[in-house]
Structures are given as structure tokens and as C-alpha cells.
Length: 169
Image (cartoon, rainbow, N blue to C red):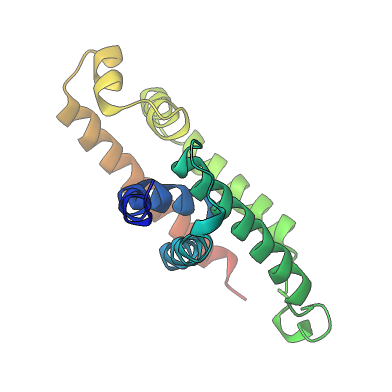
């Protein structure tokens, strides 16, 4: 297999490499950097590619190894934030804050009608699509959307009022 054929296959593999990198990395710019680093290493080491093996698998192995190496370096070189972060410490430990928010949300949800509670649980919590919810409740998709819009607006208002009350001196 000639170098030109291999290079053409590398170019054809770029979309799959981008998809894999996006699964590994938190940001799209980090994913693009990982793809670029993988391609540079692959082209620099074309002489090490063994004919008869799958090029795509070879590229994915290079990417995975590059990602793991970069992650190890990042962990080793990242500065310890424990020493100088006292000024950034929250006034309320995160556990208490989230617990209070959860209690506020539960109170607001309990004030909804049973149908509203069921709709929120079905769509928001369980992840049921609008179409399936409409079938289960025997109504149109537009009805489901408008009900959820009103419920979300009501919950937002109530939670905002609750937040303002809790911030009073």
C-alpha cells in the first residue's frame, strides 16, 4: 500500500476520529487538538504502520494513547488548588446548598396538580418524548408543550420567590 493511499484513507477517517475525540474531550477545541495531534503522529510514523492491519484501528489506538498520555501529564502538572483557594471557599458547603435547593424544588412540585406532577415526572424526570406523553395522556403534542411551558414558568416563579425570601436579612 503506497503512502498516498494511506494518506487518502487517513483523510477519509477524519470524521470518525473527530467523533471519537468529542467523546473523549470536554470541549470541541480540545477534541480538535486531539485529532490534530493524532494525525501528526500518524503521518510521522507511517513507516510503522503494518500493511494488512486496519488503518482506522491504528489511528484510534494512537488517539486513545495520546489522550491517556495527555491526561496523565495534566494530572501531574496541574497546580494544587488547596494552598491558595481559601478566598474562593463558598460560605455554605455545597451539600447544604444543594439539599436546600432540592427541598425548595420538592415543595414547589408538591403544589402542582396531580396531573401536572405526573406530566413533569413523565417528561422531565423519565425523559419521555412529547409524542409518547401525548399518547399516554390522550391529548395533542401542542397541549403537552403548553402545559409544560406553564408548569415550568410557575416553578421558576415560585423558586425565584423562595430564593428572594431566603436571601432576606
